[in-house]
Amino acid sequence: MAILDVNKLSISFGGLHAVDGFTVSIEKGELYGLIGPNGAGKTTVFNLLTGVYKPTEGIVRLDGQDITGKNTIEINRAGIARTFQNIRLFKDMPVLDNVKTGFHNRYRYSTLTGILRLPRMHQVENTLNERSMEILKVFGLDKEADVLAGNLPYGKQRKLEIARALATEPKLLLLDEPAAGMNPNETSELMDTIRFVRDHFDMTILLIEHDMKLVSGICEKLSVLNFGRLLAQGETAEVLSNPEVIAAYLGQ
Amino acid sequence: MNTDIVKKIKNRRLRSKLITYLIVIVFYVVVQILINTGNLSSLLTGLLVPICVYVIAAVSLNLVVGISGELSLGHAGFMCVGAYTSAFLSNVVGSALPETLRFILAILTGAVFAGLFGLLIGIPVLRLKGDYLAIVTLAFGEIIKNLMNVVYVGIDSKGLHVSTTSAMDLHLEPTGKQIIKGALGISGTPKNSNFTIGVILILLTLFIVQNLIDSRSGRAVMAARDNRIAAESIGIPVTKFKLLAFAVSAALAGVAGVLYSHNLATLNTKKFDYNTSILVLVFVVLGGIGNIRGSMIAAVILTALPEMLRFLSNYRMLIYAIVLIVMMLFNWAPAAREWRERVLSRLPFGRRKAVGKEEV
Image 1 (cartoon, rainbow over the protein chains, first blue to last red):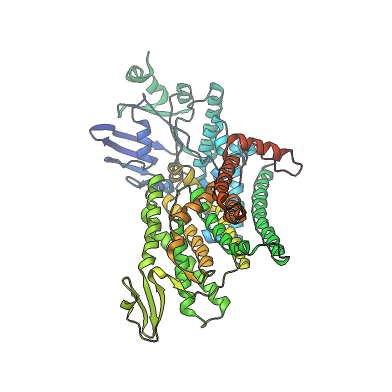
Image 2 (cartoon, rainbow over the protein chains, first blue to last red):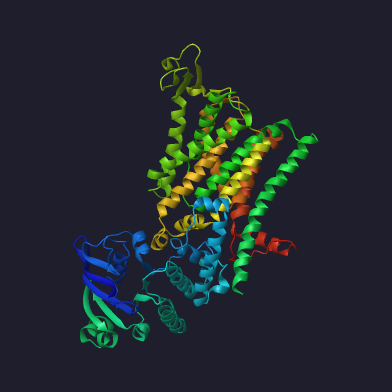
């Protein structure tokens, strides 16, 4: 069964159909790409999936559960985590705490337990530190655990955002232009990391990307959006050789 | 190794907390020595409890302004609630309970009522952001003050009587006792506050605030401050945690109010106007937004300064203003910060604050 099942998802702002009838089905463990020209509605799809916007039409099912119209917090708890096109880290907090905050709903203790420093708090904090360092290690950030997130170099900030999203233990991970602003070396390193995340965490990943090397390199399936509508969908190689896609997005 | 860096972070935070407690304790010991050797003027001795009041107020406001990142200008309002409810309780209970127990009860009452007010006001107010939030909190602070100004409460054998017009309208029995007398406030509150209790309450406030910051809830509050959208995207109920910080801060401001009201024979609302809110905010900004220790030190210096400058008579406020500006520059001007870090790193025992490392 599909992890994510989206049926005829639409939203209009005034008269503008930003997303019109977006339909997709993503299987567990798939690496799925969402591409299209600027302004095609890719990030709007992400915002619809994560509850930032409420769809005017359509249904979103995550692992069989209807999550249409739920708010961001509920949707994250249901199992969708994301990163942002313009990086959004907790920049005045250390790298380690950024990831620990990601575990907010997974490892709990009450405010009072925290203030009174009860044994349970130490127990949970130890687990949190351990698990967070594990994730940081995957991204090669473990040595910088005590650096403020805002002071990390750009590429590492992107990685930390993915690490934080993974800490919420999602079923589906949405990456919004993970390679934006990266040089070719960093991009190929990122491709390895994304593949590793998929295999290691048994994750399903949907990503928006403009870097065609990354898209053709790691995505197994693609959807192409143009003016809010689906232009093409299917296996990566097939989609990228589609004449309509070439005309609208890739160019000759 | 992995665990080393975690241990390093843990130890650094623990050390930072202990240093804060230590500063308070050393301050207490030094003042006690000065008092016992007769080296503290009676004016300054009289300022000791107000200093404690302002330190608690500043530390608690820093929880909202620095940690939660919301500008609140109504802090005096919560102090007012704490002061009035606790003074009311102490007057009603009178000598029915032993003094210590009554004062502990008064502190709890002040904290609980101020916290409840914080919660009540926070629910509508925290929907706003930035300047709007500041203006509305300012208004709520004034509303609380003006409300207290017109309330008359008395007690007799039939129970409590409340009026908002005049003392006559309470219709008390001849044996009844009028407790809150409108603009005249509350008089005859037992003088339970002293410097030692003030310092204990400061330590308690620091314990609550510092431990809250360094916990799951504290991280959620700071995450919501740094990036609201990202915090929601990882499932943190932002409003709930902003409200938590606001209510805890209000409750602690209430404790400051309790300390204040039990230090005076007569309590009225004059002291709880927006000037006090701004003053407390000045302590927070001057000491460093989010820097608990700094707001504490700023509160002590700026409360004691006008008295210590008394010998300058007319130039007193001028010097006060200059000190304010110099402190602000010293704390915040980039050149001054660089210079400070250079000097600190040269000291053998100095904190080597590598650029970009966490500052607690």
